[in-house]
Length: 168
Image 1: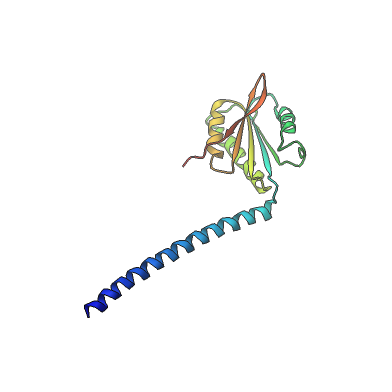
Image 2: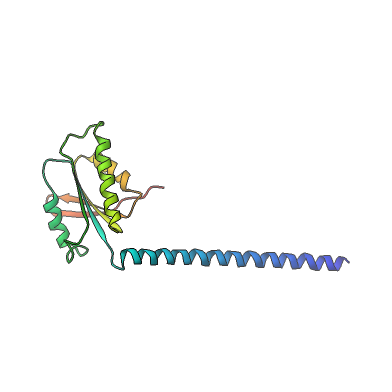
């Protein structure tokens, strides 16, 4: 009788391990299929071609949109389709104070939402204004679609400074 119980105990361990391995493999396959489906859904809605969006935030009296357009026309991602790219510009002519800051950030949120509604899968960000505005906009946009920052150097023009860091 002990032999039967000993055999059943070993068989149940083997069956349990087999079930665990089968479940783990199934989980990995389902996860991989979901990623594929999400990528296919993105391609269907957006298309195979990347759709970069341009967001200009100007908190000064000097316009920068013409300079940004000239720069984008020289870039590989904007050269052939400058007029097709989705653009949003947030111009703030008032003084930035703690009382007006929420209105400015709401405009930035609205501009980002409009760009995302057009199917943008990346955002090219150009800001002119105080550093504090840049920090707040970075915190606002850091958890959205990939955002690339550009810096205006007086000698070399605009330079890409990389992606916004996504906090955890």
